[in-house]
Amino acid sequence: MNTKLNPYYTESTILYNDGEFKKASDTTIDLYAQTLHYGYGVFEGIRAYKTESGAKIFKAEEHYNRLKRSAEMIHIPFNYSIQELIEVTYEVLKQNNFENAYIRPLIYCSPNMGINRPNQVSIMICAWEWGAYLGDQLLNLYQSSFCRPHPRSTKIEAKVCGHYVNSILASVEAKDNGFDEALLLDSEGFLAEGPGSNLFFEKDGQLYTPKKGNILPGITRATVIDLCKELNITVTEGAYKPELLEQADSAFLCGTAAEVIGVNSFNSKVFPIEWKNSLGKKLQTAYQNLVLEKELTSQNF
Image (cartoon, rainbow, N blue to C red; front, side, top):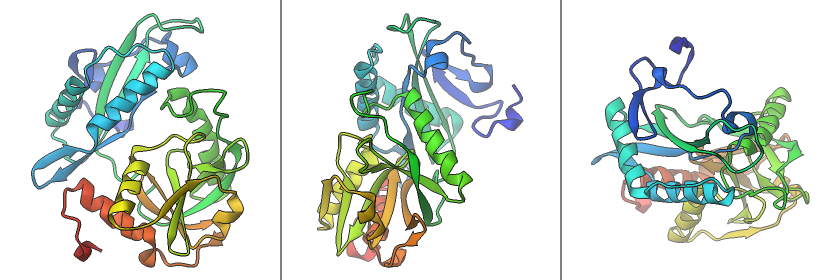
């Protein structure tokens, strides 16, 4: 493979694969792999940040516990120690001299053309230097014509490879219509989430976010809710129609890849509160302070 065309690794990049540290350019996957054909695999998105005490993986244990839950929910064996995976991940960072990095663990299945339990399972952990996935400019959101899968059709709370075809369809549709990103509803017509991020919106000095059940309950989402408690910001989880978002004062998306990113408009309706004066901006600053291990004080805002 011509690695010059690959933005994620070079000839010297090292990843972890089934107990070994290998060059990414030398690693292969069987073309008959069950994951490749059916999307039958699970993964995580994790970030490491450069702090005053060195590279720190943010909420590593929470991410690997979710990886384990995701695998178990869709009947993929998970025979790994969480602590060992965390140690391996730090070693991947060390061998690549990464301090600020995005980390991708993937559990994938061996060759199997049957639609049944996997024959064998493998794990890969790689990392690359990656800025905020959705950039740092305010987003214009488009209400997707695609909805999130019905919670009785799959394990919607698991981070499953195949689920992201839905995300790709929604994101491509939004961009093809001149928007920055999509926002999907659930199967009942309530606000759900972005293709790879959770939604919060502000109204009358309070925050609202779609409840669990029809979304992937993100680790960043949970972190934002915890920060709201620390900052005495009221946040309510519920079922909300898109009309409520159109009438909101401000909004933002959040996720490990996206971090916390402000929203300018929804369906071309611009939010009235400037981002710099919004609760989302306050939380964006608090989130950055947290991941960089800076003290949370009123001076940070």
